[in-house]
Image (cartoon, rainbow, N blue to C red; front, side, top):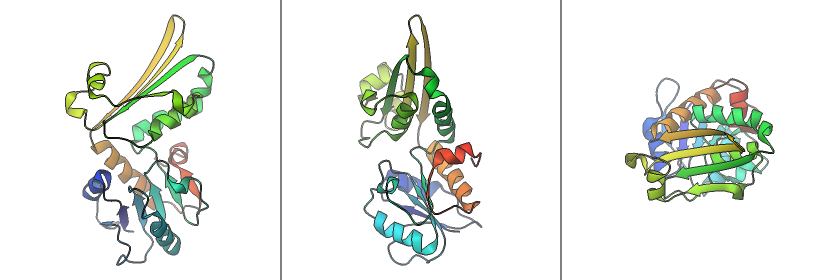
Length: 224
């Protein structure tokens, strides 16, 4: 079963170079014409302009679509093929988020702060932080986003060599003299490509229904 990577940005290029090809199928870039019309796993890491054509391909070939883009139209549309929504593809982070999703309600009523930091050029919605905020009962506008390299290095202690590619999240829960801090750090590119490879393998192994799946459903079902 071939894997088709959609997109022309940095992440798509990384996936084309890092996802394993072999007996299970080749990893190829998306092309509106010329691709074999066969059941595939399509990984969407693009801006969305190809989404209509990609959706038509998936529906006609019974292919599954792994959606890596946050705020995708597929989050709300009725779909006729399996769609896996992945706001994050680092599996350790996903399992941490699953823990928050199950237990976040225990901290309602406490003072909670949520800080996220990514490289300065990131302008899209911080999907992981939004999911964490929802689990903790926070509004999206309560998330503190840091894009200043000086603050990242001095205050958050992000190493200089990782300022150009990192994901940092901090949850601070306080109750007077008692406080709990949960912190996550992801540096570099490799964790994302490795996670996508495992997600693609999990999709290949299962006969999925024609509906949307949250990647958290995969975690809860121990498919990852």
